[in-house]
Length: 145
Image 1: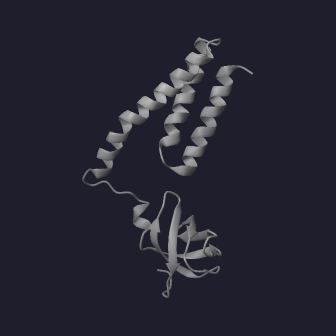
Image 2 (image 1 turned 90 degrees about the vertical axis):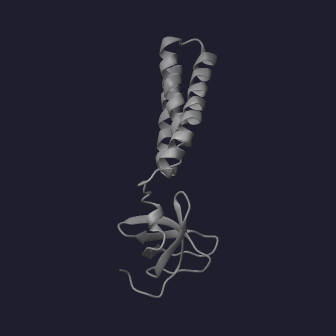
Image 3 (image 1 turned 30 degrees about the vertical axis):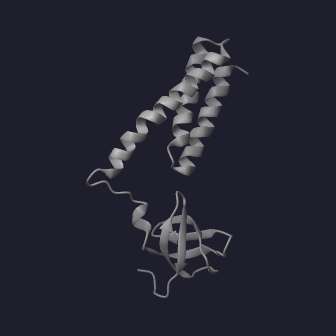
């Protein structure tokens, strides 16, 4: 198999993984792999140059976009839609027990969720915190709004 194809497959896998994690770390690695694929088309025999170009480009993108993203998030008027989930109510779709995550529906979206207590299907819950892709919920006595 040609190196450019291998680099493109790696880039695709990393970009798909980035869509699942929402961290921006895998995005830059995926872009670096895509750049390595372009270099592989130009220099098909120089695998070291391909890997170095991809690695250096991913490193440069990471270093230069971190402060930019931090400044953007701290700017006035910035609103993170995921942070707005804290305090909202939802319903358990797949049962949750301590150490065993389940699924909750908050609004129109389904999320993986953990809890310190056992929650059964259709229990009403309130979001108390969120990780990157996992919500922490607790049982809530009211009805869904």
